[in-house]
Length: 200
Image 1 (cartoon, rainbow, N blue to C red):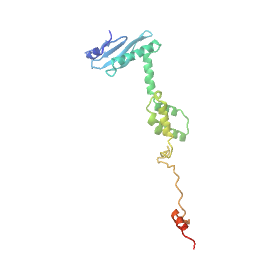
Image 2 (image 1 turned 120 degrees about the vertical axis):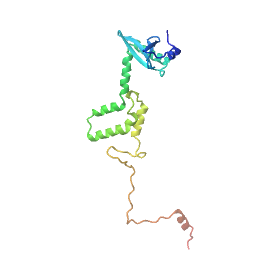
Image 3 (image 1 turned 45 degrees about the vertical axis):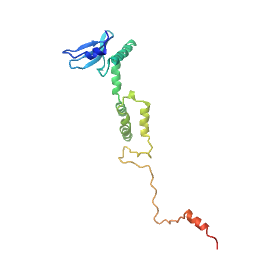
């Protein structure tokens, strides 16, 4: 008989763990401490296996059934839900920072090039992408990181890996020569005044 929300809420902890069964293969494991875990039991190649589907009440009965149905569809197509879950966890562990550092360690860069590459990753890319799993990084994520690197010098000072001070892109004007003759300039008002003087 399928579970109901009322039956799930009414399942009180006991001295020993017990299960509240739904159909097909889904059940709620109730622990003596009050914890409740959704599990999906299935058979693959003659072996019984369990797949964790979440914790109640964070995962409702309806959501647990959706996850159970997704696992059954994967089974029907010849897949293993437990193996797929492990692959997802492994993919989530492969963050951009972990993959980038592994790649960087395999490069035979000159010391100066390596230092510049490390600065680019640490100071620019890792701030936005470092903690993200590689598989979850989208094109807008990459574009935002690239735009940060390519920000024009006029809008932000460039701090190089070998220098701790900002370098200004503006070129200062050369100082005036001390002995240069400064020619007087006359404004438009003076020229108009002279034009009004009649000849003698």
